[in-house]
Amino acid sequence: MTATPATTDLSRVHLVGIGGSGMSGLARILVTRGAVVTGSDVKKSTAVEVLRTMGATIAIGHKAENLELAGEKPTVVVTSFAAIPQDNPELAAARAAGIPVIRRSDLLAELMAGHRQVLLAGTHGKTSTTSMAVNAMQHAGMDPSFAIGGQLNRAGTNAHGGTGDAFVAEADESDASLLRYSPTVAVITNIEPDHLDYFRTAESYYQVFDDFADRIVDGGYLVVCLEDEQAVATGERAVERGIQVLGYGARTESSLPCGVEIVEESVSAAGAHVRVRLALPGVPSQELSYDLHVPGHHMVLNSAAALLAGALAGGDPAELAEGLTDFTGVRRRFEYRGSQQGIRVFDDYAHHPTEVGAVLTAARSKVDAEGEGARVIACFQPHLYSRTMEFDAEFADALALADAAVVLDIYGAREQPVEGITSRIITDKMPEDMPVIFEPDFSEAAGDVIFLAQPGDVVLTIGAGTITYVAGEILTELEQRGDVEEASSAVKGQDV
Image (cartoon, rainbow, N blue to C red; front, side, top):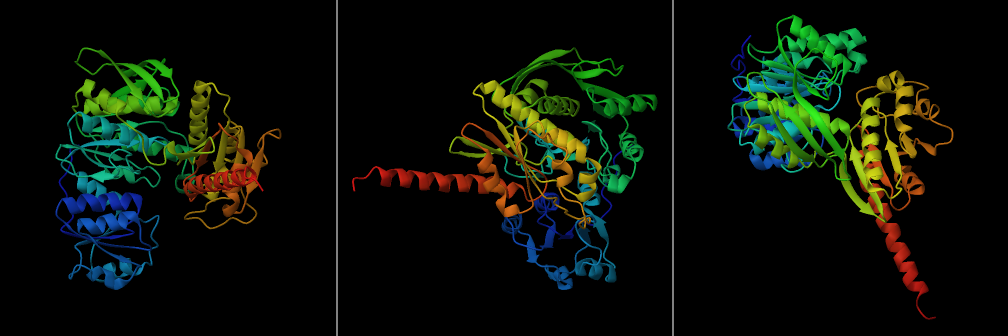
């Protein structure tokens, strides 16, 4: 199978929900490629304003007449079926006018056509691994195009239309849209049942990754994590179908060839020092070392995947490794938000029990490496009623890795509330001797965290919903309390 040229007229593109994290990135690439870009969103945002400065015409609010923003109708309308209802007036107007309506994943496939596609898939770690691969490949002078689900801290953007022949992107399995792509290098970081509201069964969820492997072009590679049982099983089945497979991670009992073996991993307060052995087919193996500024073994694994993907895409291994050292993280992936009153606040997008456990384990490693007896305080907002009900016990176990926790009520996102279901189904399963606050009032979350925290502690706001705003509120409230205490001390010290 080989990559096919674009088949959709992308000269005038209208994007419904243009300010979204995924949609705004694709709009950015379209603008840089010379397309006339219009769009709409429900509210103003930084992404909207940036696109406007680049030349896009954007309306706030959804109306049928928005299709005329450029003076003539678009050649195609792009939407996210998960985020935008089918009765949206712009979608209805497009269908009435006979204008093609495609999904965001279809647009990404069109933009990647003719490029060497490096696609990162898996239940966890897609954004971090994709971002590491992009940073490494940029450092190696490859200037890849890319589209990721978060903003690179150093680049400050989520997408770029590069001059190189590689296009690096996340491959989202949540609605099987990853089957639209034709990867040259396909990475599977891990596989653990998720999105069962769509797939219904774990077996169906596993199958989509097998089908993704079958999309790899002739001469391409499937890259799998050797430390993940289901990823290995997927790789072994792919080998039986004649697909080239390479693994990464600490060497295991798997029969799969190891492309990047993690030889040494030394945890530090800043992150980790990593030494790996790279072994590409037909090339003498070589050892490489680099430092990571993001903590956790899961990040070490992500870096190994990024290194192998970049090398298979033609990057110089030594320069790729230097790019990993240069990687400073992704927004909302163990992102440092600030410190007040000796309390450090980090923010993370984790929304599956395994992800929550990984980020809390990373936080624990960080405070243990500092050796100052600091505690880890988790402030968690569950995402989706279906996921919370499916994994309530697993969430309780993951949160128990913290020293104390504040658990907000469920952020439903696209789902309607389920009668009788709250986050108490998680907190009721947590250890009785652990300080835990179930907080149904979002506005009280920052105060709850401050009540639990003390100087030296590390606080993590965790979740895929609105929890990210709590991180800033914690820091603001701590600062205000500090100002009050300082003023009070000053008054007490005055002679009366």
